[in-house]
Length: 208
Image (cartoon, rainbow, N blue to C red):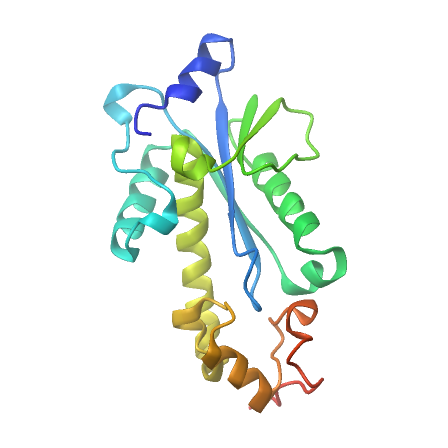
Protein backbone atom coordinates (compact mmCIF):
# COMPACT_ATOMS: atom_id res chain seq x y z
CA UNK A 1 0.00 0.00 0.00
CA UNK A 2 2.70 2.50 1.00
CA UNK A 3 4.82 1.66 -2.02
CA UNK A 4 2.56 3.38 -4.61
CA UNK A 5 3.04 0.30 -6.80
CA UNK A 6 0.20 0.98 -9.23
CA UNK A 7 0.91 4.70 -9.46
CA UNK A 8 4.54 3.91 -10.37
CA UNK A 9 3.41 1.41 -13.02
CA UNK A 10 1.37 4.11 -14.73
CA UNK A 11 4.26 6.56 -14.36
CA UNK A 12 6.43 4.13 -16.34
CA UNK A 13 3.73 4.16 -19.03
CA UNK A 14 4.07 7.94 -19.33
CA UNK A 15 1.43 9.19 -16.87
CA UNK A 16 2.99 11.83 -14.63
CA UNK A 17 0.00 12.84 -12.48
CA UNK A 18 -1.96 9.77 -11.38
CA UNK A 19 -4.89 10.69 -9.12
CA UNK A 20 -6.70 8.44 -6.67
CA UNK A 21 -10.40 9.18 -6.09
CA UNK A 22 -12.79 7.92 -3.41
CA UNK A 23 -16.10 8.81 -1.77
CA UNK A 24 -17.59 8.80 1.70
CA UNK A 25 -21.26 9.00 2.61
CA UNK A 26 -23.24 7.02 0.07
CA UNK A 27 -25.28 5.24 2.75
CA UNK A 28 -26.31 7.84 5.36
CA UNK A 29 -29.83 9.19 5.76
CA UNK A 30 -28.54 12.76 6.04
CA UNK A 31 -25.76 14.99 4.82
CA UNK A 32 -23.83 15.17 1.56
CA UNK A 33 -21.78 12.60 -0.26
CA UNK A 34 -18.14 13.74 -0.16
CA UNK A 35 -15.41 12.85 -2.63
CA UNK A 36 -11.69 13.53 -2.68
CA UNK A 37 -9.05 13.29 -5.38
CA UNK A 38 -5.34 13.10 -4.52
CA UNK A 39 -2.12 13.10 -6.53
CA UNK A 40 0.62 11.74 -4.29
CA UNK A 41 4.34 12.37 -4.87
CA UNK A 42 6.36 9.37 -6.05
CA UNK A 43 9.60 10.52 -4.44
CA UNK A 44 10.61 8.31 -1.52
CA UNK A 45 11.47 11.23 0.79
CA UNK A 46 7.93 12.63 0.52
CA UNK A 47 6.11 9.33 1.04
CA UNK A 48 3.33 9.27 3.65
CA UNK A 49 3.43 6.07 5.71
CA UNK A 50 0.39 4.30 7.15
CA UNK A 51 -2.21 5.16 4.49
CA UNK A 52 -5.07 2.67 4.40
CA UNK A 53 -8.82 2.44 3.85
CA UNK A 54 -10.16 5.20 6.14
CA UNK A 55 -12.66 2.79 7.71
CA UNK A 56 -9.76 0.70 9.06
CA UNK A 57 -8.15 3.63 10.88
CA UNK A 58 -9.01 5.28 14.19
CA UNK A 59 -10.32 8.84 14.07
CA UNK A 60 -7.08 10.10 15.63
CA UNK A 61 -4.95 8.29 13.06
CA UNK A 62 -7.15 9.54 10.19
CA UNK A 63 -6.79 13.14 11.35
CA UNK A 64 -3.01 12.86 11.61
CA UNK A 65 -2.71 11.22 8.19
CA UNK A 66 -5.05 13.77 6.59
CA UNK A 67 -2.70 16.59 7.62
CA UNK A 68 0.33 14.68 6.34
CA UNK A 69 -1.39 13.92 3.02
CA UNK A 70 -2.37 17.57 2.50
CA UNK A 71 1.21 18.69 3.11
CA UNK A 72 2.84 16.00 0.96
CA UNK A 73 0.39 15.75 -1.95
CA UNK A 74 1.24 17.29 -5.29
CA UNK A 75 -2.45 18.18 -5.50
CA UNK A 76 -5.74 17.36 -3.79
CA UNK A 77 -9.37 18.46 -3.92
CA UNK A 78 -12.45 17.68 -1.82
CA UNK A 79 -16.00 18.15 -3.11
CA UNK A 80 -19.49 17.53 -1.73
CA UNK A 81 -22.93 17.04 -3.30
CA UNK A 82 -25.87 17.90 -1.06
CA UNK A 83 -28.94 15.93 -0.02
CA UNK A 84 -31.23 17.84 -2.36
CA UNK A 85 -29.16 16.82 -5.37
CA UNK A 86 -28.93 13.23 -4.13
CA UNK A 87 -32.75 13.12 -3.95
CA UNK A 88 -33.05 14.60 -7.44
CA UNK A 89 -30.53 12.47 -9.37
CA UNK A 90 -30.03 9.41 -7.05
CA UNK A 91 -26.97 8.56 -4.97
CA UNK A 92 -25.03 6.80 -7.74
CA UNK A 93 -25.22 9.76 -10.11
CA UNK A 94 -24.56 12.20 -7.26
CA UNK A 95 -21.41 10.27 -6.37
CA UNK A 96 -20.22 10.24 -9.98
CA UNK A 97 -20.83 13.99 -10.18
CA UNK A 98 -18.97 14.57 -6.92
CA UNK A 99 -15.95 12.52 -8.07
CA UNK A 100 -15.90 14.34 -11.40
CA UNK A 101 -15.89 17.71 -9.66
CA UNK A 102 -13.01 16.65 -7.39
CA UNK A 103 -10.94 15.46 -10.35
CA UNK A 104 -11.62 18.65 -12.30
CA UNK A 105 -10.49 20.83 -9.39
CA UNK A 106 -7.06 19.18 -9.16
CA UNK A 107 -3.97 21.25 -9.74
CA UNK A 108 -1.81 19.96 -11.34
CA UNK A 109 -4.31 18.39 -13.74
CA UNK A 110 -4.49 14.60 -13.48
CA UNK A 111 -3.52 12.61 -16.57
CA UNK A 112 -4.80 9.26 -15.22
CA UNK A 113 -7.50 8.57 -12.63
CA UNK A 114 -7.86 5.55 -10.33
CA UNK A 115 -11.30 5.25 -8.71
CA UNK A 116 -12.51 3.01 -5.91
CA UNK A 117 -15.12 0.35 -6.63
CA UNK A 118 -16.58 0.03 -10.12
CA UNK A 119 -17.27 3.71 -10.74
CA UNK A 120 -16.90 5.16 -14.25
CA UNK A 121 -16.64 8.94 -14.42
CA UNK A 122 -17.75 11.32 -17.15
CA UNK A 123 -14.24 12.65 -17.78
CA UNK A 124 -11.94 12.78 -20.80
CA UNK A 125 -8.96 11.60 -18.73
CA UNK A 126 -8.02 7.88 -18.92
CA UNK A 127 -9.34 6.01 -15.88
CA UNK A 128 -9.45 2.66 -14.16
CA UNK A 129 -11.76 1.50 -11.35
CA UNK A 130 -10.44 -0.89 -8.71
CA UNK A 131 -12.64 -2.93 -6.37
CA UNK A 132 -11.53 -2.32 -2.75
CA UNK A 133 -9.09 0.22 -4.14
CA UNK A 134 -9.13 2.21 -0.89
CA UNK A 135 -7.34 -0.72 0.79
CA UNK A 136 -5.12 -1.64 -2.17
CA UNK A 137 -4.01 1.61 -3.85
CA UNK A 138 -2.21 4.29 -1.87
CA UNK A 139 -3.64 7.34 -3.65
CA UNK A 140 -7.20 5.99 -3.38
CA UNK A 141 -6.64 5.29 0.32
CA UNK A 142 -5.37 8.85 0.73
CA UNK A 143 -8.50 10.17 -0.97
CA UNK A 144 -10.70 8.09 1.34
CA UNK A 145 -8.96 9.62 4.38
CA UNK A 146 -9.42 13.20 3.15
CA UNK A 147 -13.07 12.58 2.28
CA UNK A 148 -13.81 10.87 5.60
CA UNK A 149 -12.18 13.52 7.81
CA UNK A 150 -13.87 16.31 5.86
CA UNK A 151 -17.31 14.73 6.10
CA UNK A 152 -17.00 13.83 9.78
CA UNK A 153 -16.09 17.44 10.62
CA UNK A 154 -18.99 18.69 8.52
CA UNK A 155 -21.50 16.40 10.24
CA UNK A 156 -20.17 17.42 13.66
CA UNK A 157 -20.85 21.04 12.66
CA UNK A 158 -24.40 20.13 11.57
CA UNK A 159 -24.91 18.47 14.97
CA UNK A 160 -24.67 21.89 16.59
CA UNK A 161 -27.61 23.10 14.49
CA UNK A 162 -29.63 19.88 14.71
CA UNK A 163 -28.56 18.26 18.02
CA UNK A 164 -31.44 15.79 18.36
CA UNK A 165 -30.22 13.55 15.51
CA UNK A 166 -26.76 12.75 16.92
CA UNK A 167 -24.90 13.69 13.74
CA UNK A 168 -21.67 14.18 15.71
CA UNK A 169 -21.44 10.45 16.44
CA UNK A 170 -23.58 8.76 13.76
CA UNK A 171 -22.45 10.96 10.81
CA UNK A 172 -26.00 10.77 9.44
CA UNK A 173 -26.20 6.96 9.27
CA UNK A 174 -29.42 5.20 10.18
CA UNK A 175 -28.83 4.28 13.81
CA UNK A 176 -31.78 3.47 16.06
CA UNK A 177 -31.31 6.81 17.83
CA UNK A 178 -31.32 8.71 14.54
CA UNK A 179 -34.43 6.95 13.20
CA UNK A 180 -36.24 7.57 16.48
CA UNK A 181 -35.38 11.28 16.29
CA UNK A 182 -36.82 11.46 12.76
CA UNK A 183 -40.03 9.80 13.94
CA UNK A 184 -40.31 12.20 16.88
CA UNK A 185 -39.15 15.49 15.36
CA UNK A 186 -39.45 15.00 11.61
CA UNK A 187 -36.60 15.58 9.19
CA UNK A 188 -34.24 18.55 8.96
CA UNK A 189 -32.96 20.32 5.80
CA UNK A 190 -29.95 18.02 5.34
CA UNK A 191 -31.96 14.77 5.35
CA UNK A 192 -32.25 12.76 2.14
CA UNK A 193 -35.99 12.41 1.66
CA UNK A 194 -35.61 9.43 -0.68
CA UNK A 195 -33.65 7.60 2.04
CA UNK A 196 -36.04 8.13 4.96
CA UNK A 197 -39.44 7.53 3.37
CA UNK A 198 -39.86 4.08 4.99
CA UNK A 199 -40.11 5.56 8.48
CA UNK A 200 -40.79 9.27 7.87
CA UNK A 201 -44.38 10.49 8.26
CA UNK A 202 -43.88 13.64 6.17
CA UNK A 203 -43.25 16.06 9.03
CA UNK A 204 -40.33 18.47 8.87
CA UNK A 205 -38.46 19.71 11.91
CA UNK A 206 -39.72 23.06 13.17
CA UNK A 207 -37.09 25.86 13.29
CA UNK A 208 -35.81 26.73 16.75
